[in-house]
Length: 175
Image (tube, rainbow, N blue to C red; front, side):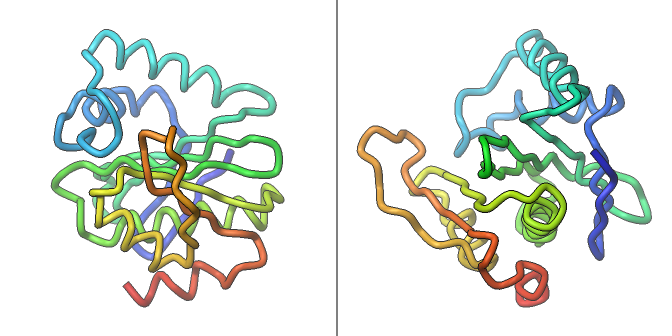
């Protein structure tokens, strides 16, 4: 896993230095309101250890990067890929003070470009709760297509982006 960069971010592979960020995100009710139940600190620590170990695997299925703001090195959140064959689910957790800043757009665009060009994946997908209008706007901005609803999917809205879709790099500047 390598460092990725955007205009405003260094996407740094998950390391032990990101424990506090990971735990803060997964225990914050505001961050988790569209994602799922908050974890307590002990569970977040345990999940971080599992994520860190999984990312160190010779062929990891889950790749996570810290979204470090260039210039000051402050972490704005996490972005990751959960790889399943030739597809991957992409997602981001953003600290409240960085939400609505366009950083998620940059990070997910970089993930899509990396997934298609470097990892050779054929499709990305994501999902969110239907009431998360900011996530829906982000997916549209990046060129993802809405997929039909699934009655048994608690996250509701699903989106997909194929490797032959228009480049997400061009769409980043449109945000």
